Image (cartoon, rainbow, N blue to C red):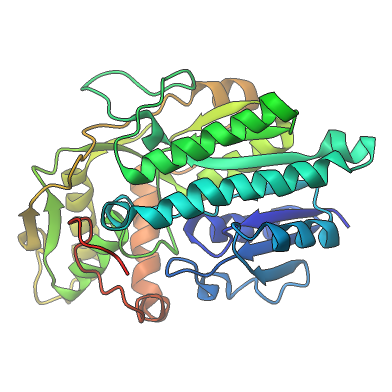
Length: 355
C-alpha cells in the first residue's frame, strides 16, 4: 500500500494536513508525533480511527525509532512538520528549539538518507523528503519589497535561527548526498486547531471571555497571512509535482498589521456573539511592551509556486478569518482540553525560562 510518513502530524499545520490528505488522497498515512504541549490527539479525533491512519508517538531526535518506522512502513515520502514553532517560547527557552528543530531535523535526514539509499531504483526515484519551514528565516523587511526564494537568510530570533539551520541541513543533504529534498517556506498560518498561544486564537478566546487583548508595541508589525488549508493544498502540489531540490515560498498575498487583525477579530466576535456583556471587544485592546527583537514586516512573493505548479489560495482573509472565529466558538471543548496543561494564555517571550 502507498504510504507517506508525516512527522508532527498532531500539531496545528500537521493535523490539518493529515485530515486533508486522508480526505483527498489514496493510501496510508503514518503520523509520527512526540505529543508535546502543542501536539494533541484531540486535533485528530475525526480521523484517528481511520484504518489508513497509523499514529506512532515518537521523537524525531530518536534516530533508532525513526529508522524502525521507515523500515516497517516503507513510505514513498516524508513530510516534516515536527518543530518547536513559537517565537516567544524560543526567547524563554531556546535549547528545546535547537534540540528539536536542528538536531531532530538532522536525525530525520540521516534516517531518511540511509533508508532511501537502500531502496530499489524505481522506489528510490519516486521518494521525496519535504521539509516545511517558515518565512521568518529571512529576517525583517522594510516598508516595501518581498521575500523570494533567493532572499538571503537573516534570522533574528532563536526560533527562526533554528529553522534556518534545519533548512540548510535539508538543502545540504540534497546537494551532498542526492537525497530528493524539497523545502517550503510559508507565511503566518491561521485556522482551526491552532494552539491558543498564537495571535489569532489568543485574541478570539480572550475576546470571548472579556480578557485583555495584548498587542505588542504599536501593533503595526506586518505579517502575510495564509489559511492553513490553502497551505496544505500547496504542500500536496509540491510533493506531487516539484523536482527534487526545489524550494517554494508559500504565502497568502495578504499583508495585515497586528492591530488590523485584532480589530477584524473584535468585529467578528461582536457580530457572532451579540450577547457578550463586554461588547464592543475593541475596548479590551491593551498595548504591551514589545517582544524582544520583534521583526517589523514579513511579506512573501509566492509567484514561483503559482507559475510553476498552478497553486492559488482559495480563501480570502475575510472568509478564512470568519471560518476560524466560528470554529473556535463552536469547539470550546477542544480549547478547554488543549489548555488544561500548564499554558493558560499567559504572556510568553519575556526571557523567563520555560520548564
